[in-house]
Every structure is written in structure tokens, then in C-alpha cells.
Amino acid sequence: MTDALTISGLTKTYDDFVLDHVSFSVPNGSIVGLIGENGAGKSTTINAVLGLIQKDDGHVSILERGELDDAVKEQIGVVFDGSNYPEILSPGKLNRVMKRIYRSWDEPAYFQLLKQFSLPAGKQIRQFSKGMKMKLAISVALSHHSRLLILDEATSGLDPVVRDDILDMLLDFVQDEDHSILVSSHITSDLEKIADYIVLIHEGKIVFSRPKDELLEQYGILKCGAAQFDALDPADIIVYRKMDYEWQVLIADRQKMQKKYPDAMIVPAAIDEIMLLYVKGEKG
Amino acid sequence: MKGVLLKDLYIAKSNLLVTAISLLVLGFGLSFLLEPGALLVLAPVVSTTAVFISITSDAGSKWNKNVITMPLSRAQIIAEKYVFYLILAASGSAIVLPPCVLCTPSGAAVTASSLCLYGTLGMSATFFAGAISLPCAYLSDPEKSQIVFMLSFLASTGIITGLILLLNLIFPVKDQIPAAFGIVSVISAICLFLSYLIAVKLYRKRDIV
Image (cartoon, rainbow over all chains, first blue to last red; front, side):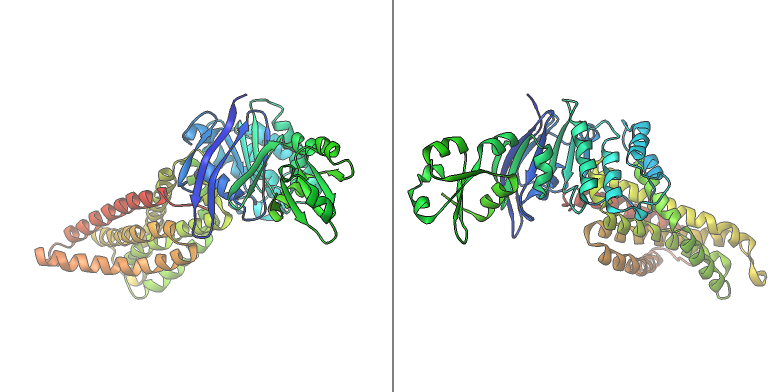
């Protein structure tokens, strides 16, 4: 399987933050969820991939091209948090603008999406709700035959119904195995629904990049007291966190650990619990 | 570039009423003090404010970030703003030209040479102001660029005065007014082009977040 996006050793240094040799890939036909707390480096990574900021080091390959030229940009749909379109425009006027920017602009597909999302073509964007603006941004991103969608916190601040509509749309998009999505979010429940791979970034560094099913089916949280924690083999502990009355230990293989520690209580780990343990826990 | 230009024209259209009223009020006020042709000096200046409204609007709506992800180079994005600036400056002059010719309060005579002089002066001032303010609009935040925009017109007046004084050392400007202002307008156009090259060079390396 080839990759729609490959990031290797991506580095960007600010006075107070360093994106430190970030590497991961987005395989063709898959949805990759980039998770992390606010300020972890998700948007910096995406901005560097899209050429919005100058990288200090590293290499980005998009759609098998090492350079982000116009031909590649033509095939990338980007959705940021918010609409990012002049608010005095209407979706109808935006269509006239976009068909002069994108060579592959598909006007019938755009109006079909507007209809599907119940977006009025003649109303100014400033009169739209946040959910409508987001649906409009997704309609634009899907109307120029994009092969790769990049969404940066696109579902933040939206109600569950709108988020669900958008997630359905993203799932439809990847039905074509030539289509791929990189979606950053701190709403891990959304990514749990749609992502094939999860990439966790923390303090500018990639903590892990794994298939979501592997995380949900194999990872677990071992809950124990102090004595039981002391008896654990350090090699089995990925990270741990001391709570008020118990220790929570993130482990990589639930079944194997249950056999090794039959008295321990081991529960499946949700994505947000895994993220929380990595971010707030200590290494074993 | 056509798409981005169309977007800016939509923004300019939404501010058309404000621009037209500004020109009307200025023209009416000045008609009592100066000859109507003087409106040609102000028209391009007033009409190009829409460029700065569009730059501020781009930053406010984060279009400036979105457009980088579209199949356009940064040089094209900058070039579009300069083209937009030129279109508005030319349109401003073209719009006030008929009233300048037709509306001659108190029987003031309007000659072709005075219209050319005022037109050249207006365009030169606009080009110098654009040469200063357009790169600054891309290199500083929108609030600061608005201040630079206002100051740039004062600066352009100073530059033109300085150039005329300089030319007067070479030949008597009073005897050759068209030639002097012709040279000034050519220099202003060169400055605008150089500022475009500088803006592109600086914007290419700028982080947009």
C-alpha cells in the first residue's frame, strides 16, 4: 500500500515550542487521526505539511510528490477550524471564485453538496451558523476531485448531529481507496468512530502511530494498588498514573497481561484514556 | 489569479457605496476651493482603500491562510493584490473624469493639460503610497498596516515634493511641468514594481498561521 502523505523528521523551532522530528504517514485509502492536547503540535504539523510555515528540517511527500506544487494542491482539500472564506460572499459567489482557482472544480458536485447539506446558495456566509460554515468548507474541499483531505480541528465546537453528518461524509469519501484523510482533533470520540490509524503527538513529539483497532483491541488499563504495582514487571508498563486510590497502568497487550497477572483488574482502554495516560502519566 | 481577483472585486463592490459617497463629499467640498480637476488627485487614493479593506478582511476571515493551500503560488497571491490596486486606482480616476469635465461650478475652465497634470499627480501619489503600504500590509498585522496605509499617502506627498525639488536642480520645473510630472510618474511606477518584487521575496518566507 502506498502512502498519500509521508512526513519524515519534520522539525520546526519556535522560541517556546519545538516540533521535534515528527514522522508518520497516511496510507492510501485510510483515515489517520492526529490527536494530542491543545498546543501539542497538531496544527504546526499540518501547517508545515501545507507549506503555511517554513519547516526547519525534514521531508514531506504528498501524493507521491516531494514538492507541494499547484498540481498537488489541486488534489488536496483542506478544512480548518472555521469557514476561512470572506463572510460577505455567498456559496453561489464562492462557486464563481473557486471555479477560477481550481482547474478541476466540479460545479454540479458543489451544488449537489450544498443541496445535501441544506446550504442556501444565495445567503451570505456571515449569516451561517458555525456548523453551516463547516459544511460549506467541506463542500468546497470535496468539489475539486481531492484525493487527500486534511482537516485541522474541523469538528471542534460543533454539535453532535453536525459532527455525525461530517463524519459520515468523511467515511463516504474514503470508500474510494485512492482517497485518504488526515484529521486532527482533540475530540477523540470522533476519531474512534472513523479513524483507521491514530497518531498521538505530545509536546511536539510523536508518541505513537498505530492502527486504531490494535489500540482498542490490545491496549488496556491495569488498575491496581501500590503493592500490586510494585510487583509489576517494569517492561510491561508503558506509562502509569497514580490516582487517589489506585494506580492506572497502560499496557500493550490485555490478554497477555491478564494471563501474567491473573489477579489484576484489566479493562479496555479508550483512545482518550490512552491519550490522557500518555500525556499525564509517567514512563514505566 | 482570476478567482482571487474576483473575490476582491466582490469585496470592493460591497464597499462601493462608501467609496462613492467619500468621493462625492470630497469632490463637492473641494469644488469650492480648487478647480474640479483636482478630484483626479484624490480619486485613485480614495478608491484604493478597498485593497486594504480586502487585506484586512483576508486576515480576519483567515482567507489568507486558506488561499495558500489552493493551487496558487505566493507570488501570484501578491501579484493579484497589486493588480487589484492598479485596477482600483485606474477605475477611481476613470469614474471622476466625466464629472471633472462636465461639472464646472462657477464657470471654472477645465483644460486637457490640467486634467493630465492632476491625473498624473494622483496616480504618482497612489503608486508611491502603494509601494510603501502594500508590502507592509503583508509583513505586519492588519492594525499596523492600516496606520502605514494612512501615513503612506503623507509620505508619497513628501516624496513627490522632494523629487520635484530635485528635478528643479536639473531643469526649471516651472517651464516644463508636464515633463517633470511625467518623470515623477515613471519613477513612482518603477517603485511600485520594485515593491512588488520585495513583497514577493519577503512573503515567500513568511509563516502564515
